[in-house]
Length: 188
Image (tube, rainbow, N blue to C red):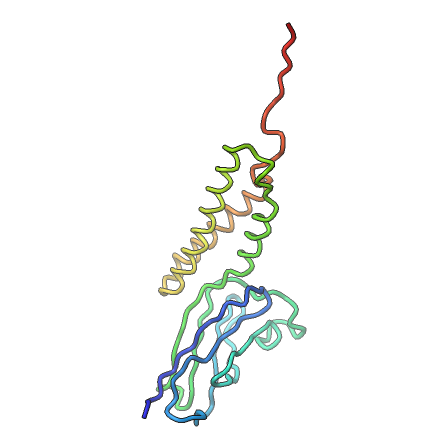
């Protein structure tokens, strides 16, 4: 007979409005016979929220059920989220995860990428824009990796660097103006 082994997975929703957490636990009985399943979520800049957790299911959280905005129509903040899933007795039966949520930054990255008219730029500028976007993506992925490995300070540094680079990239019109060469007319 299997023993209780709690586990959760944060499932990508590709949506700034939702955070999805799936129960990936192994329970000794089917259906699970557990008491007081709950999840504690530390939302960046908003604090800790303790909510009921539905076992063997995908639990979706918004600003509404996290107590940030009653309408639930605001994007969730990016940053490091600390999650703790537990069943009674909670001081013995729990699992913790740390994740870096980057959906808002990723949405801004996607918009910048889609605005970049790769056909308008000359080859050198197109190559430079690709390098800049790849570097920004590298910093975003680095922030996620650092948070997954409990390196919060490094995760925040990488996130802020990616955001700064992306803002600069967007501010500079993605490097493409359509007027990359000055036309000089020579008269003989």
